[in-house]
Image (cartoon, rainbow over all chains, first blue to last red; front, side):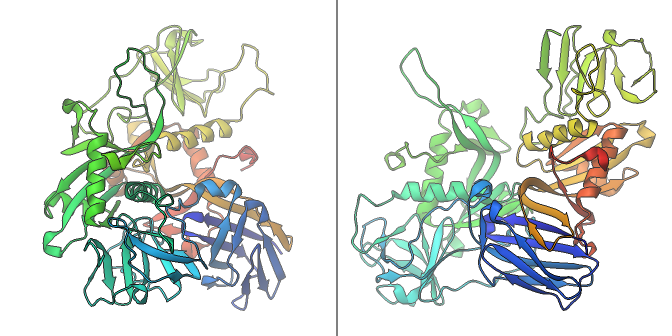
Amino acid sequence: MKFSVLVEWLPKIRACNFIIKTADCSQDSSVTIKTSNVLINVPAMGCLEFRFSSTGVTLVPDSLSGLFNNNNSIIFRARIDDFNGSIQKNGPTQSVNYKINEDTVVFCAACKHQVSKTLRMSRALPLPTNGEMDFFCHQHSGHKLSSLNPGLTDIFYDHLYFLIHTDHLLQGSDAAKFECFNCSTTLGKIEKKAVKIWNSDAFIQNSVYDPHKCVPRYHQFLSGLFNLTEDVPAQMNKFVFICDGDRANETYTRMWVLDRSLMLSECESDSREVDLNCKIVKKVLYSHHAELSSEVDDFIKSPTALSISLSPSGQEILLKVLSFMSRNIPVEFSIVNGMKVSYLMFDDDINWDDL
Amino acid sequence: MSRALPLPTNGEMDFFCHQHSGHKLSSLNPGLTDIFYDHLYFLIHTDHLLQGSDAAKFECFNCSTTLGKIEKKAVKIWNSDAFIQNSVYDPHKCVPRYHQFLSGLFNLTEDVPAQMNKFVFICDGDRANETYTRMWVLDRSLMLSECESDSREVDLNCKIVKKVLYSHHAELSSEVDDFIKSPTALSISLSPSGQEILLKVLSFMSRNIPVEFSIVNGMKVSYLMFDDDINWDDL
């Protein structure tokens, strides 16, 4: 009895791939996923136990999927429930913490008016990364994932938006847009029974609005965007942000991440002596397009590009920040490949709302 | 030596965001007291060689192993074929060849910008005999647990590896040419022994992937790992 085991831990997508190779496998083998161990019952070998407490990972019990079993190998995927220790720094960067089993409410970020009924969610789950990135090393044409619809006690979230069931909205709507009924700001989109709400336009808080607990819109959007560019695989370095208006009015922002972890010192001063500190930023090229030009189309079709929907206010924040961060680059060096040079930075100390 | 300086990254990567055609950096020649180094080799002045040579190859005059290349007054010496130590050889201080080459390779793939995820390793023989290894880094920081056992109970630890696809080509095929021309690819010279180590390690690291899942896009799935605990010399 000799076997090998390979486990790819993928904390960013909360999954792990088990690959067990042995000459003694059979198609009658069974797999049991437990919190801190996996049991594999191979008729010719008995029960094998794989423990992984030293990795700091816990799995969702019975979360077996994608089981492949032939005479010399068993392959399956399981869901990661939680992780810490050395694996933590490779985990996803969670942009917003959604509290489950607590009364919360969605507020409009513009007028701070309540726009949902009281929510009490039992599940807060991350959505798969935009497109099919969780499943393939780069984008494939011809594949389309069906949408994921939240139940009545579910909140599904991405870096830039979250999904809840339309029954939670204060006012029923047959329209495709979800608007604040107080100030008419567009907060998201309605698709069948799911409402997609932008982090840049609305926020979730305890039932009574508390301005001291309110995360500024810029903060919420930029941390989400920063984390999004952090979490996608290394080869995905081009982004097309599509402003989510009507199809006829769509606008596009191309962004090409040149360096994901540049150390940058930046300072504006009128003193003769300057102490420089440095921060980690992403060096990017960007360009904005009022229509679907050939440059945008080339980006969209690139296998290393991700297309991402933005709300009008999200796009406004993105362009404002990129323009602000490029202000100190001399004009002679500010354009590369027809795109402007800038830096994407997320910094708690900067008051982006003052821009 | 009075100066030990890192060489610019292969190609023009230190100056541009991706490769540009029509640009060629002139070579950097070390002075008599300079050592210039890259992840996989170092350069010194040819006057330091024990025996003068008019040949393009730098060979060990004892065992005739090719240790590097000579270009004008600079000799390029592969880390996988030679090492630098105090004047008196001390086997206890000697870093194993595999260790030196793999740590260099791992660091090289770590240091290039995120978008440079394709590598073409060109084995540095005569032009007519060049061989090529394509490597495509899919994940630069995958957490991997790996174990071979005959016990029923296994405790898994995990390490950071790079998940890669690779393929070896005896000649300049269209696939290799496509890789070389890709703006997100780096072409890197390897010595024959460097190529041997690379292929051995990638083959070794792919041994536990079932054959049904071992080929993607015509390339083999493997992992690039650098681990002090593994005795690569036993491969």
